[in-house]
Length: 228
Image (cartoon, rainbow, N blue to C red):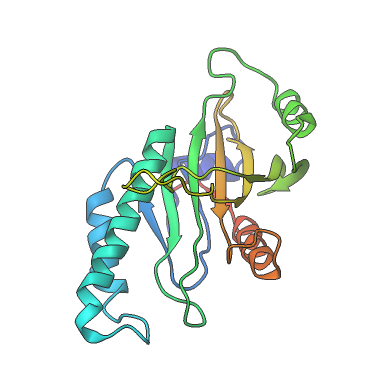
């Protein structure tokens, strides 16, 4: 088995920034690239992962179900792109225990220190010491290197409209958020974030919502850089 030049440099301890990253996803989750191949990825998801609709949905409603899922995924893609820097969107497309999980996370590039070289430890210290209303920041290790985990709650979700088409105001959707901020090794000024969001079962403090957060943390624990 041959290795690429960048992977050989990495194995030899030479400075070579990674070309990408890898994650192990739970069953039923998919990756939607945000920069290239987005449309093709959506088509693959709809036709390969959603051939069977969940139990309880009448056969006559199968097409409507797929169209609703397509609109939801396209809306998530638009939201991710509006935030800028997005690389990949991850979301569940198959039900677990007969229900669809309302959750997603985005891997994105972050513009930290791109105009000047800011020491990694200084950035991590600043992020870890930032006050998060109703949340907390923690220094951790990701892929064997220092990073920051930020956990908080949000009273507003860009994926949800603030009012109905008739103009009737709705209550803001409460969501649990967890962000990981990770420096790219051997590439000063480049950082990525992994941003998770879920309304859980409607109660962001419920055991079910906590399980979704734990699931995301478990996914991030599989993160590693790719040099191929």
